[in-house]
Length: 148
Image (cartoon, rainbow, N blue to C red; front, top):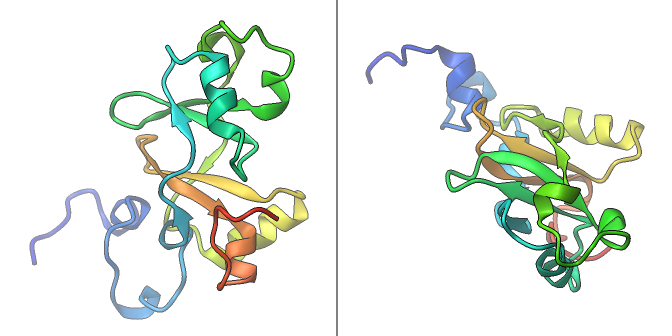
């Protein structure tokens, strides 16, 4: 095996395979919904409203062509926005994200304490890996996208 120049922490932060002591620790990046609702800056508010209509998600992640997270458009904002407007005009920029090597139990506790259900998981460069649902860890038989 060749040396990874950026080090072990960067390796884990990109969600790459682990072995040794950390192999049996569940990390957030392993428990994500890899297909949350996403759209692009040019998408319209109406398109996002349609996308979220039957979704358990309360938001859509705005990504570029490389799936770097640029922002988030919440369902609550859509209700008061011009349906023909682009999501860029209504989104919140740079939502908070976590790395895939965040221990899942630690993240679930943090979300519970903040009364949040989900966390956006990205690489250090901001590329979307998926969305971690607190309930998925608390009830492993449930699917991340199921309504609750």
